[in-house]
Image (tube, rainbow, N blue to C red; front, side, top):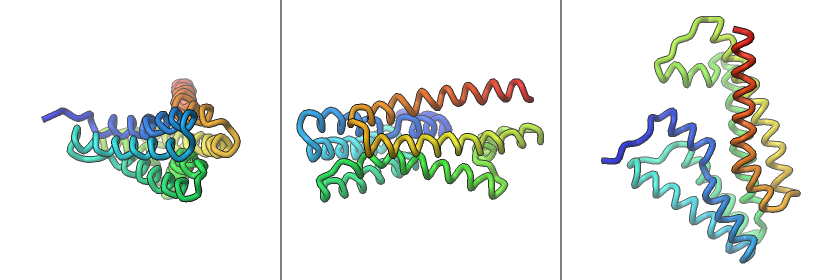
Amino acid sequence: MPSSPPKGKQAALALLFGGLLPVIAFTIIEEKYGVIAGLIAGMTFGVGEILFEIIRHHKVATMTWIGNGLLLALGGISLVSNEGIWFKLQPALIEGAFAIALWGSCLLKKPLLSVVAEKQGQTFPDAIKIKLVGITWRTGVFFAIHTGLAIWAALDWSTTNWALLKGVGLTVTFIIYLGAEFFYLRKNV
């Protein structure tokens, strides 16, 4: 039986890299063969990611279902409308929902980052728990800003630049943001 990565690691990978292959397929095929062919390629790779997880892990991560389900729904709307814009809005919708979930968890006094850490057996002193509320809120701000950027990219940027933002841009800026949080925490804790 193939081994699967720990749940936390699998979820993090799904968040950062989920839906990347459909984006790459859409971008390459759309440039050479047009929007409809690009959409079909992107949607096919979305189904492929789901099937891969079923075969490899015998289940599909929630983020994969959400990301690819949204990708397939928006891809279907794009096919009917003959415009790739709906397909391109998928990253913005995922990032926007994540920002809302992070902020909502803070308002409910159960910051998502604390809940995830506790589910993995981590315990923190109260001083750290208070800091996790701030980090969770600021991470929501990061995703809200990136949502605005992703909407702008979907509406006005070339498909290649949009794909770069979705793939490399989100990952690199999130790593930079996490590095800044790390240094802020080190200095203030």
